Image 1 (cartoon, protein in one colour):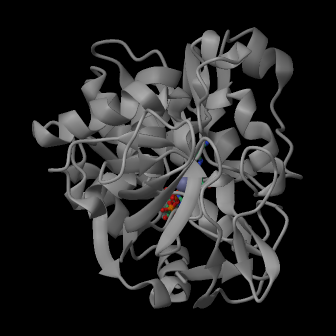
Image 2: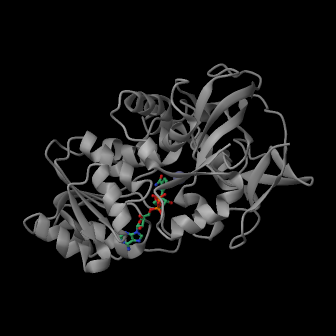
Image 3: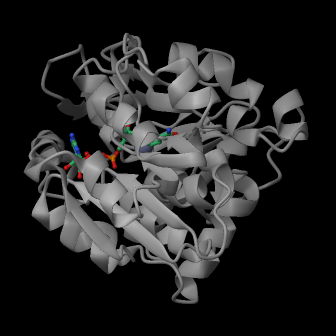
Length: 367
Ligand code: PAD
Ligand code: ZN
């Protein structure tokens, strides 16, 4: 009987309780979690920014060890270390075949129901079905995931670091290296330097950006941004960040600007600080009712700006997860520096508080 952190309803504190877990069905695996990062998207379900059916086991940024495989599973076996992908990528659907596995159709039912790929549930609490966030449910000592959502990595990557690859790193680094087209010598701006934004910064430097202008309201986040490769720091609590970025770029704007918070006003700032002919990449997940207010002619057409959404760093998890693990082992990717504090599953409510207060890059639950 694993212990798991359950979101019972929007606005309610998370409850850490014993739950039942059914055995894996065909094409599924049971994973004993080693660690799980606490991402803003977990908080967004608890506070109602992201509206999904409740109750459910939260968590979608995890790594662990395969304990049991269901019928027909051949990509992993018992004892393998895996990163959990919150978009299980089937490899066969239209999107996977068009190199856009992050949009894999096989994940649609799971996303809508918080169940597994067929919409059925593996977790129960007191005989009542429990969903699991994005076919993951990593805020649990154990979980069942589709085998296509378990990606094998080398055993030498510590669990705390491996877990972060599963969302914040894959999304942020991928936003810079896959979603955007950053050229050697570019100037990039990043609004929001949390667990995801810091990875956009290190990804942008990896992609060849010469200057990375980090924008945040918290001095501690700007210090971290510098550690992750930012060359210029803008504190958005001290005046309009758009004019500051314009001043730093000969009034032209950034070649590529990223929004990594999920707020209407900062999305508009991101588009405004993008240069003519440049790219605005939207990563942060806004409340569902947020609409963009951008002048279509003067703001987009005349200026030939590209405004592009980013889902899961436009990543192919089956190739990008092992690549990121390798970059980490070679010392080319910072992961340990993202771990602000290691916590217990019981501390998840405090991890949400610390995230809202801007105290942490990532809290990581260690099992
Ligand atoms: P986080 O809370 O760690 O970071 C957010 C950062 O934004 C913090 O450093 C804040 O200080 C900063 N911030 C807040 N308001 C402002 C402001 N007005 N101006 C400047 N800075 C500000 O969150 P995170 O990094 O875990 O996640 C960031 C977003 O990315 C969030 O919306 C999350 O849901 C989303 C996300 N999207 C995907 C995807 O596939 N698109 C994947 C994972 C996470
Ligand atoms: Zn996430």
